[in-house]
Image (cartoon, rainbow over all chains, first blue to last red; front, top):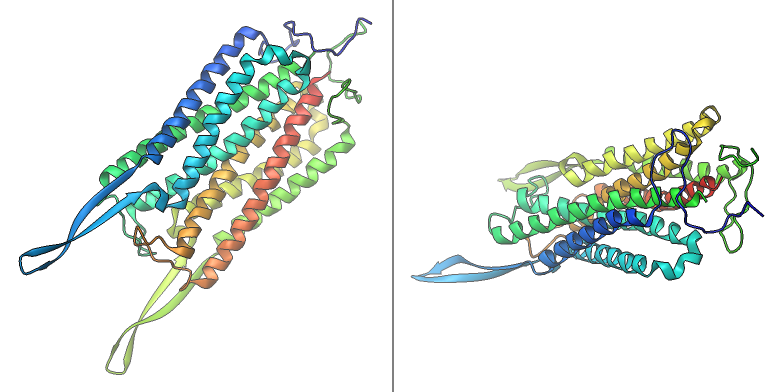
Length: 199
Length: 199
């Protein structure tokens, strides 16, 4: 038969007006590079947040001339949103590393071509949800830490724990970079699935 | 020519081992039903949160026998995370309604078949990111409202504004239902794209 819907990987032109995503193995490098950047950004977000800790000593009273000190520590573990942030970014980093490894081993799974592009497209979408949830939850919690909430009578803490807040801001920026990269990666995964289903 | 990569919509079998998603127009009803449910859940989350307001009067002091009252109002607008929650759920609701309408008008755009399944797959993925961000940000903020955060000296407010918190919890449940539906819808969109690219 001349007409087979097998998994042969030759380049295909999609006809008029169609987007020109070419399923060549060479074009993989863009995606792999983006995945590496996303993995690094998510790993940076995880590390900066997980190592974020600041201890400060405050003078709360004076008895005679002896100051009474209070030592307080700000840790990411004290805030559930930051714990979720660390978990989400860790998982996103691992996901991208695993996808890179699977891609390099990909030639061994060529015959499973019908799942080779479907599974990354679905997993990338799930990871976008995870990173978005973690980054947004932490960002809005950080906003309360920075500005407080006068209605709820929650005082800001960034005036006392400035280093903790600076590091937290760094972790948030890294995580939103990872989220932006994951959005691009997810779109590319969907485009690749579409291009490679056209056999 | 017998071999054309046109947009004819006849059912296709994908060969051995492949998942049996059939691109029949009848199978659209599942997706449309899920989209309607997601739109309703997101709209419910928006409405319950946007109408959430509780006013309470507290006795803060007594001068002689005259109580000094303080009237406080808890509103969703006081918390940026809840504002984002309302925006995210409104957009998710609109997105699903627009997708339903476009699907019913779909026969007019048959000739644009190569974008007909691509655009929903990408937009659904972006909406998943949006709803996930909104729902998670609000959920972690609600957790502080419910339990407080002793380390940051943020007192819980749900002991004073119990109705506000109950309504907020309802909105959160609706939003997480919408998120779960959006995840399923996004997977189905990706499967449909894959099935319909196989022409």
